[in-house]
Length: 279
Length: 278
Image (cartoon, rainbow over all chains, first blue to last red; front, side, top):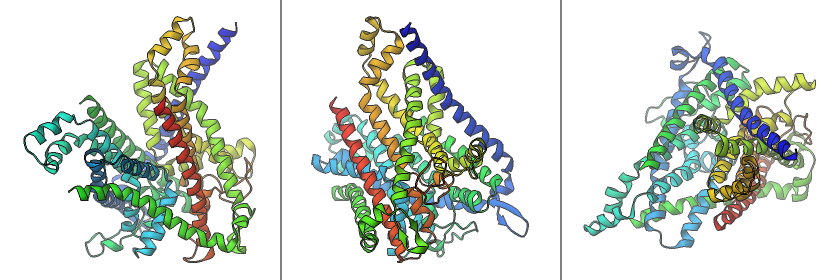
């Protein structure tokens, strides 16, 4: 009898909790799409907000998001891949490796509001970048570095030792071996790392709100004005419309776009990750 | 080339040192002006009246995190057991990407749904004057930590050697008894790591709870408007003047938060190390 009760409670808990998780997800997706999808139109995506016409558009936010992604990846990718190459190919001293890995894990665990503080004192104030997209992107570099290091490192580890020995045996130097054999065979992992990093940048709001500004106006991205560009990315724009303008239909439309972007980013990452596992 | 790669490796260490040093340098002045004891244990935070006590913020962060863990961990754990042991492969293959989608949704989106669905619902159900409350924040946080709890626990449960489970089944235990009394204890350090990671995520979240918690620096109570350590910083960061005591005090809050996070990280490392040794 007691055993039957145990069996029954266990089953209820297992199925019940899974149902809660699944229900929650269905609800979130359904609710966001239901309230947001209607507001997405070509004009919404391709124009800036206009007070005169009374129309809302998020093109500036899209452009700002792309800019932040490109700049932060451009800086974080070489640094992260370099660090991973050092850790797997060059490092001899185990203490040193442990210190770097510990640092990378620490960076991964620091919450974004702390990064926002650091960005404000370091990039906006000390380096005099003010509140600009550039300052925001540079702050994000620190934040996405661990993601790129880890996933590159994982994929470098899967490159068979015999490849390296073969290249070295044929008389290649170490750097030549890394460049022509090791890195090309771990390209999947590096790309996965980039995709995950893009995901973090797209989803980030706290850092950008305080280091990159909240303007919804169109920015100029011409080379000489680049350093001064400042404005909201998609997430910050969502916050702006929801909390400061109480314009929820626009906020939900942006949320729907973010949701779709998350689906795309996740499927790309898991597709590449699966390919990596098979190889 | 080696020098260049070594530099890249060192840069992560450099960033951690930089962050630590900057936070300490900019966090100390306000604490010295206010007094450590009055800063940490002062019960009122009112920048206008020059009162900077962060006890309500600390307690709110602790209660909020504890609440999120109490709700999120059981749901996450049972879902993980279901995914790892019970679910047919087809079902698991649908739920698993769904869970990682849950992990990828930006925190402002959680905040938005919380603001538009949860807050009004709480106001109506509990007959509150306003639904922005610690309770709303706890529920949002619980949802947000769910994916990391699920995926980490699932990985830990799947790593349990099959022989353990087969031995238990052969001795006449039912499947469920085996999962709960053999598999789960065998995976306990992995599950513990999942919980610690969840604590870290919950205590560090800012944007989502800024949208649902009301942001008044009250002493925490479930139905009251509250301010967390994270939101304590974020609410005033844009409005405080550079170099003012208020701005400096925000950095001091950052330092306290950083201290909590480092404590959690150290604990996580300890748990993970023990798992490696097992």
